[in-house]
Amino acid sequence: QVQVVESGGGLVQPGGSLSLSCAAYGMVFSMYVMGWYRQAPGKQRELVAEITPGSSTNYANFVKGRFSISRDHLKKTMYLQMNSLTPDDTAVYYCNARSIDLRDSLTYWGQGTQVTVSS
Image 1: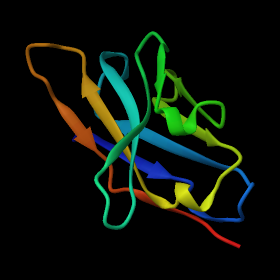
Image 2 (image 1 turned 120 degrees about the vertical axis):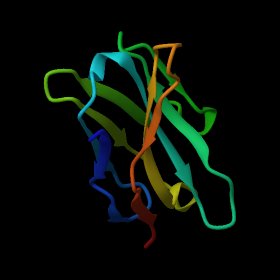
Image 3 (image 1 turned 180 degrees about the vertical axis):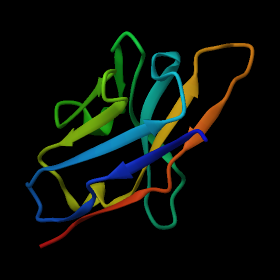
């Protein structure tokens, strides 16, 4: 069964740091672009960052210089290191896996992990 599972969310003070992980199961990890999305209450889900199988990265402007995405092919895990967090970063963070195989266009979502930035 293919699934992606996030972990690492929680409560952090403004200016603090938090690290998220996304473990992938049942898939050929190297065939997927992995991404982090987030959704705040009352807002649409938005891309935070994504990383290709070759580790090319793309970041939303609002996280550039603060967040860092990475992946470990041996562990089939993706990471998001978040620094200098602000209350605007409060959201549910979702892991996404998108197949690079144009024949199937498969995509998977995790259940989400809550990140709350508050004093």
